[in-house]
Each structure stands twice: as structure tokens, then as C-alpha cells.
Image 1 (tube, rainbow, N blue to C red):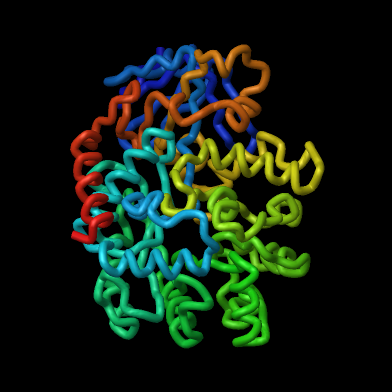
Image 2 (image 1 turned 135 degrees about the vertical axis):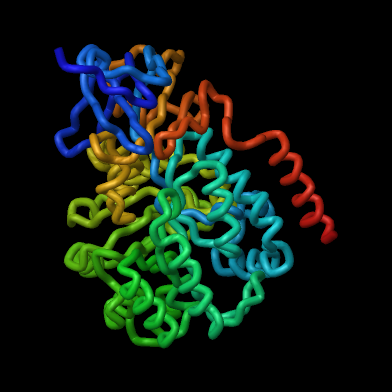
Length: 441
């Protein structure tokens, strides 16, 4: 008789939705975890017969899923939630940059990052691609709380709240990239804010740095009509054409938003294997429009789902984002078959992982991948009865249904209890920050 394997965590008894290439779903499934990795996935009886677990999680009545992947956010902007609302994007940017220059210091970013990780863990997000000031602070918070973060140096053509001049950013960027290059939780990237805030020479340096470190290049692109017009006036090209002329489109490029694209630009993204982070609720709130996501997916563009920052969204809830993304495409196309539930859920899991070039590590429940796993309680009135798991995941589940969360094999929330953060203390500090911002203290 074959000896049992000893594993650290055994999750059993729930419906396991793997999101693997063959779309395996186990009605009574189990997952075994050793260290940071998934070592077994399959029918519950089979897995349980082969392992002895130090910790066992009974998932009866739950659906077991890969952790959600937030492909684009500005995590610490939680401290500015609700501060600047109901105005167009360009004036919003001017106001928020002014506030950031006064208040996005290291201490406040630490509090905002903690608040963001609480919100994301509670809603089942286990990975986020972040672009913000004081990146080292957010990275260290992520490591402390056990959250998977994709982040890196950001380039912009003015002195921000970190006090760093544009010409000083490259050596500091290298320090960050070297420090986190092989970190188990912090994935590196190189970021430029946008084509309209970063001059050509600096954009080229940013791309060269990403290429040197063989990592993801991230920027905002074609978010608003005004942005597209600005770049056309400056360079005679749209933002995508301009980026392509600089050699900055490719399989290791992630573009946030891409709301205003022509047919040929969508085809260009597909030809260059360039990924898009779709942030529907933020785009709606600042009134910039609706990205042509159905067309992108049909063309073969890799698309992940993002929340953007809580200052424009105003939350970090990917369940709401999924719901909005699916309904928007159906409504704007007047086609109820657009963005079916499985395709939408894919954007929030393996699709997001692929957009971040992390599909070999996260995004699905497969042997050898990191154990980023969430348990969603389906024993709820709004999830009863159950005919189609994907339908409920996109159209009915809400963030409060997430009960337990593992990241990198570590249980960070169990039965709604956060295990790596003191939520009440963080909220108290966030309220203090809010008072200082509100009253200019």
C-alpha cells in the first residue's frame, strides 16, 4: 500500500473550479497544499486517501476557486476614497495630484496599503498589479500581510510626493528591481504613467529597463478622448501607434484601460500579443466610455480585469467588476451572448494571470502552481438553487460570500477572520489620516 503524503493544508468537500486549460470541475473535490504549492487536485475521496494534513479545511457548501487577480489598481488611494468625485478624468487628475503631493507620504501610503489589502483579501483577491507612489512601503506591507503584489518603479515627468526628480528615478528603480527580483510574493515590473505625462526619451528608457530585467512594462493608454487627441496633436499618432513606434508593444506589455481603440488598433494588440487591463467601473465613473472588450477577446487579445484605484471606483471589489463588465458588453452591443459568464470569470482569474505573464504560477488550481485559493460560501439565499456555477460567480456572488483565503499556501483569512492584519487598528489609523486630509492638518 502506497504511503500517504504529508501536506500542510487539505481543502475538501467543496465544488472545485480549477480554471485549468481543460476546465476541470470537481463536484466533490479537494486540493492538497505543501508549503506554497498545490501538490494535488482532484476528487475528494481520491485526494484524501493519499494525504495526511496538518490543517484541514472543510469546504462543504462552498465553491473552491483560484484567488482573483486584480490586473490594475492604485492600492493606497483608499485614503482618498470619495474625496474627488463626479468630475471628468482630466480635472480629476489635476485635483488628485495636488492632494497626493500634500498627503501621499510614506506613513499615509502604509495605512492606505493596509486598508487596500484588507479590502482585497476580504473580497477574495489574492494578487494585485499596483502602480503608486512609495512603492517600497506598499511592497513591505504586502510581504508582512502575505499578499501577492506586482509592482515596480513608476516614471513620470514631474516631482511627485516622494520628492524624486525624473532624472533620479532610474538608479532608484534599479535598486527596487534588484531587491525584489526573486521575491516569492512581490513580482516586479517597470511602469510609465502614460504617454502624455512621460516624454519620449524617458519612455524609451523605461522600456529598455523593463527589457533589461526581462519583466513587464505597464502604462495607461487610450483612456479618454482627450488623451488620444493630445497624443495625436503632439506626435501625429494615437497612443497605441506612438507606443508601437517606440517598440513598447509586445508580449510583456500591459496597457491599462484602452477605452478608445479603432479596429486596426485592436488587431495591433493581438499581433503584438499585448495585454489589456479592463477597469469598467472606473471608466464609467469618470465618464470616459466603455472599452470594446468583446472585440478584443474575439481578436485574441489577453484581457485581465482591474478595479483601478479606490479614488475613482470607489472600491476594490472584483465581483462587482465582473458583473459590470459582463452587463456592459451585452448592453452596448445589444447582444446577450456577449461576455458569457465563463469568459468573464476567466478575466478575473487565469486571464488576469496571463495578462501579468504569471499564468505559469497563479490563476488556476493546478499541481505545481502557487496555492492562492479562496472558498466562497454558496449556502446563501441569493445563491440558491445552483444550476450553473459560473452564472452565480459572475451574476450573483458578492464579496461577503468569500469565507476563507489562502495566498502562497498561507491562510490569511479563515471564516471571515483576518489572520495577518488588525482590521480595527488599520481603520482607526485610516480615519486619522482622513481627518488630516479633510482639514489640512
